[in-house]
Image (cartoon, rainbow, N blue to C red; front, side, top):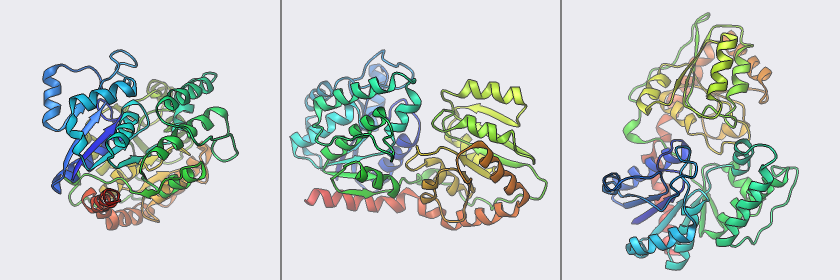
Length: 410
């Protein structure tokens, strides 16, 4: 097959979407498919663009200064659409357009798919309603959400109108962001989500196209070989690792508040950066927490730290739709600490510690209970190791190929 990936979240970024695209691209190519990736990005010179092209990765028209060094911003979808059609006419002969995210490059891909009569598969990765809530300052959220809807509806029809409710759209801004997500998904021929719980939410808000669940996978070439069972002896220091963004939506600050209430020995290593990094740094120093901030690091460094840990923390709540860090922990045989009941879907049963709810008091109670029963670490680690092969992308990619073949034959 000839497969074109399109994403507004890929070049110059890190995170779950980037990891997912890289793993799937490598696995599909290993199976003999021809895979191209088109993404917005920061300014590059001709030599840098040529180096990307060798890997079949192409930068689409992007704004040069808007949010520079924070996140790449695509130019208007019509500009991207015209550029793709002129620069890469061979796209008309591709078998499937595989689209990630819901901004300019992704919108252009959906429109081109319709124009060229090529099947479009849209992956709905994230909770944009919660993302907007955490990123945009209070007082501007509704205005920004309305403007994003207006912009999005210029290019894709908004046949569904999402209204405020008591489920997840408990405000105008959140309702508007669900409106974007739902109408974007409905323009595709097929929708993928990484989890059952997110599929149910999308259907609730009005996605009528067929939705299939395809969980993210771990790249084979980075799979740790023969990791050991993790063990914690009574009185020993509990080694915890955090390798998500240090940000409000990932809830670093509530986790640090919880650590203040932990009675036993612990050490937390934090890999990653984000909007709460310096706030966390000041809090750690002020309260004398046994926490070390490492900042951003390459994956090999992070993986070594995961393998040396007893517990992997992902304490986001009502935000993540999958949690790539969880399968990175599973690959290493490391138990995980979660707050969100939805995240239980990602890892094997009895391989995790889950707090009663998301507040810092309950997180601290769960950690203190674990320190009182350290033998649980070994039991959970053994379960992770028994199931870890299941997360390999090479084991999961056959399901994606089947999905592509099914939509192509329709």
